[in-house]
Amino acid sequence: MSGEQTPMCSMDLPEVKVKETSMAGRCRVFWYEQYVQPCIVELVGSALFIFIGCLSVIENSPNTGLLQPALAHGLALGLIITSLGNISGGHFNPAVSLAVTVIGGLKTMLLIPYWISQLFGGLIGAALAKVVSPEERFWNASGAAFAIVQEQEQVAEALGIEIILTMLLVLAVCMGAVNEKTMGPLAPFSIGFSVIVDILAGGSISGACMNPARAFGPAVMAGYWDFHWIYWLGPLLAGLFVGLLIRLLIGDEKTRLILKSR
Image 1 (cartoon, rainbow, N blue to C red):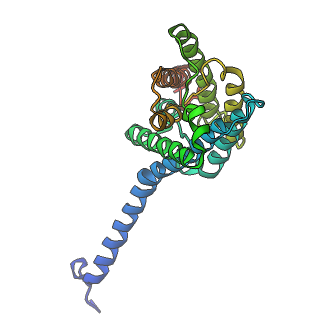
Image 2: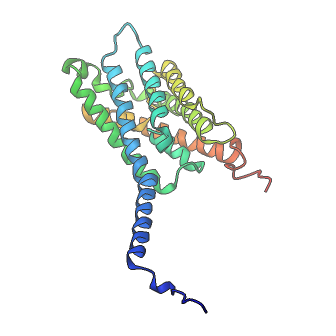
Image 3: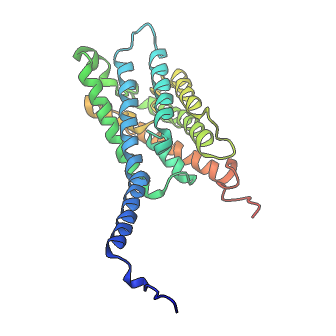
């Protein structure tokens, strides 16, 4: 032969190290963007949403009724989803994360980290609202905690309305932003509008929470826990119901578990 071949094992050591370093760097970036960054975004988005929501309740004028909280919650959620949704999915709500997990839009291993991020975000948002609010107004509004249910006789209707209202919200998220057949660019706006409609319709019955993180943060800041479980059980049941409805019946063929062509 006219020349000698260089064995693979004789590759320069620096070149091997560069390739290993590059691979390790790509793995770190992948791990960060797939698992860490979405949780950070859920925490930040939840904090912003719940801060705006709590402040709208604490500073609400009696003359505006439900309109100010409804617009503030809905518009804030739509804006935050538009800004951050492409990173984490824009859930900012444990009930939404549960439903999206059921229909296959979120890795199961991320469900608990998402919940933790959302709850801590709720704490931060409620704490910020407490810091910037006049003390008298804060306590007059129970720190924006859900204090509308006062008697045992109100529990059934409050729980029922929380399930129904949350189903509308979760349906808007799952069908507008996750299900491929029905998803579209207007999803953030339809999700925000669903919150506005829900609060206007059911705010006087249960407070129209629809979000355990929205209930949890203010409850901690105000120390108000009366009938708090309603705002966990209702939304989470709704998330499970909608997830199963889409998974079994109304989802696209990729999502459905039954009646598939192949």
